[in-house]
Picture 1 (cartoon, rainbow, N blue to C red):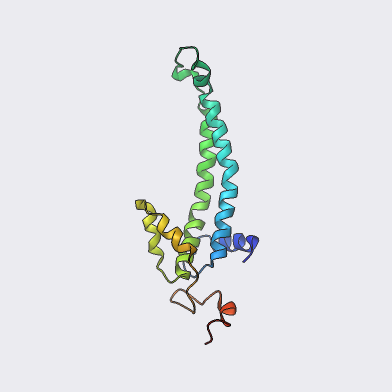
Picture 2 (cartoon, rainbow, N blue to C red; picture 1 turned 180 degrees about the vertical axis):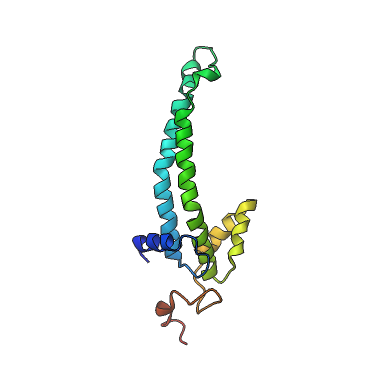
Length: 152
């Protein structure tokens, strides 16, 4: 699956937690999320620095800045943009990870480990190859490629 196909598929299956997703679909979409998030992270960083600039200016003078010296509006805009982008990508990223776990033959409940600090486990599982043949979550998406290796 190509980069563009992966993005289209993940947006089309925005909140679809059933079925299977190949490795390429998951990792291309993950790359897309990272590439889109970088500019918004930079915007947040710049607005954060603009907000805290009075503290940097006063650091060498021995005068502590007052709360009224700070203009929090730029930082709030940066936070709002970052939160909106994160919320837009939350559901499709969870859905594609659940479909990816289904593809290796595991239940999607493994993503709950992410909420208790063990998020590396589902990510490692996402690296694994697809389970051969059909499983309870759907047909093998690599069936055409596997026919040479797994005769039926």
